[in-house]
Image (cartoon, rainbow, N blue to C red):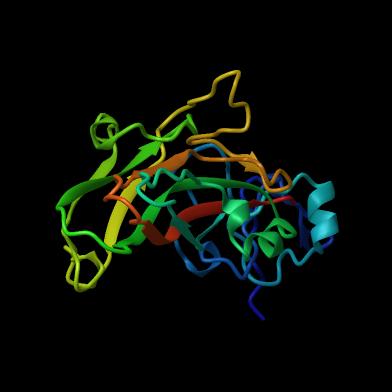
Amino acid sequence: MQRPALLRGASKFDGGVTPVERSVVPSSGAAARGSDPKKEDGDEKFVVVQAGVLEAPKSALASMGVSLRETKTRLAIYGTSTSTANTANTTVIPVEPANSSEFSALSGLFAECKVHGGRLHYTVSASAGNVAQFSVFAFDPMNSTALSGVANGVEYSQFDLRGLNPDTALASPTPVAQKGYYTFHFKVLKGSARSSSAATVFQSEWSATTDASDTYGFLKPYVPALGAGVTTTIVYVLELDISFRSRY
């Protein structure tokens, strides 16, 4: 049987190996199959070990101060918002991973998470009306105050402006996109966007999975009022690109 290679800086004794580096990638990870073990962030070190060299339980790894590789995935959040009659639709959608039904299971496995950005897939419909209008979605990294108008939304660095053409017969705006819905791509800011009044709002930072109130910004629509007795409805799926780090 071929003996496993020594870890970098390891020493021989009793035919075994002693790891010097404390951070490892588990043998089942991608790095164990030959991928680059270096992280893009550069904030953690990883040492590749061959299968069978180190098969310690998680409790033992935790006592050694071992940090496992990050996991990147997607979470989806479904929602709707309907305005009152002849009133603008100005709901505010928080970018909160905990609002996903799958988050509770992941929070039991990982200690921290970080949202990189995502996509908002949405449609807008009206109960009646035949006046062409604009609607807008904007991404605000910090403030949860609703938009005051379409022009206000366009003032943001990340926004999605759409032309709506409510048709009396169809009772809904004609979709611009071929698939019948719009998609707004957004990214969280690089660096902090904290303020004393929004202590749980993060940007390109890690937050604890145990804190369900942690937020990575706000998606703000503005669909104008379309006339007496007319309501508007937004139906959306918020898709988040998110990373998790293990508690071990």
